[in-house]
Length: 111
Image (cartoon, rainbow, N blue to C red; front, side, top):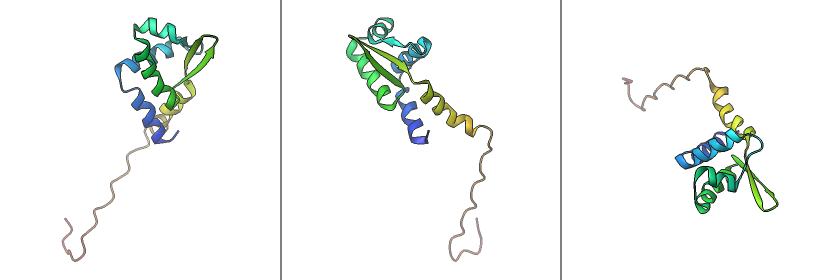
């Protein structure tokens, strides 16, 4: 996963209501929860829930599957692993040294 995709995923989670929603889906695991179950568990109006889910679905954090009259939501664990994998891959690699400052033309005394 590239840094832009990681940033979009993390930005979608940058809200308390969306974090609560996503945490609930993660706890539910692979079976996920229906929109009705989410709404009841979070005591959230349907329009508010739809608003929060829409962004998470657009970036791929949550998948939705219609099952008859219900829509089941599931977290995409592969995407979550890829987003955090970006940071794990960078872990303990060291910090690159800053590039030396360029000396302005005609300056004999570098600062």
